[in-house]
Image (cartoon, rainbow, N blue to C red):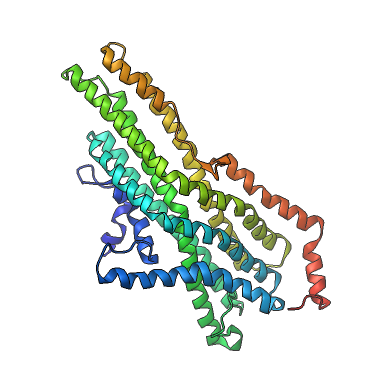
Length: 411
């Protein structure tokens, strides 16, 4: 059982068969649990569709609606820290609705990329190339598990810090169970809230990690391609025709990677743009909760875990996109420095064609407006400091307390 769940987290031996699909193993397991990866046919597909509708309704409809209804009906019962904790999740739900709907509707793109990029697996023939490939498969699956731990860790910390304080964690509107009616009702309502928020969090996980999975695949195959290009025309036993065929294979594989990047481009543009629009607000609210309102060590830990989760939603993807541009440049450099000077005219013509294509880096944009990069991520995150400055300059925290003490805040 342990081997079944964790075997992809360790680098496989070089003599073991590994495929590109293995890199997305844990990703598709989580997608299957959420109802996003249905069986191809049979009765189970229709039964599975009911589970899909259930998770989609809970994470995309009930979660944001339940938080909003609570503000309308029970706003006077929130403390500042409780309100900010709930508001963080509610605002993040806006991005989750957009990203989850887009990602779920475009899951076919992932399957198409798996089909295309799997054709490159047979190119990994040398021990160096297989080592690069095997390490990438283990690393990507480990990253998905770390994301899952980070996201669910926030839910777990918020659950227990709130319950031990005698409050429901997010105070979702629940017409069936009122957590204020007793100890057992508090635990039942809190566990139900935890399940709903965890489903929404895992939906966001699927929307955030697909870019890491597939961009890591692109980088891996570009690294293998670079190694193959560096070894072109290095074997004296091969004929000129065989050298030319190896070059053509490299051109075809590079074209396949470009094609895969074009498949993922539309969905990546929308999901990252939605995340960029909300990351500054979420970070600002979490920081305000820590800096301006009374907290326990546990509520601070819950807010810090939320900040970490928000940062991991976009920063790793932005960093990988920058590395992908560098990898594209390294491929063109490797081609330029390869042994082509003494080749025949046909080989040189193919090199010139390949060099022209390789010099165009694989670059993604968010909303077709600004590049997906670390600099762009930092720029949108700086909006959090603007929110903190406004709250500090206007003394909104003190005014909130004074208004509550005077009874000016009513439901």
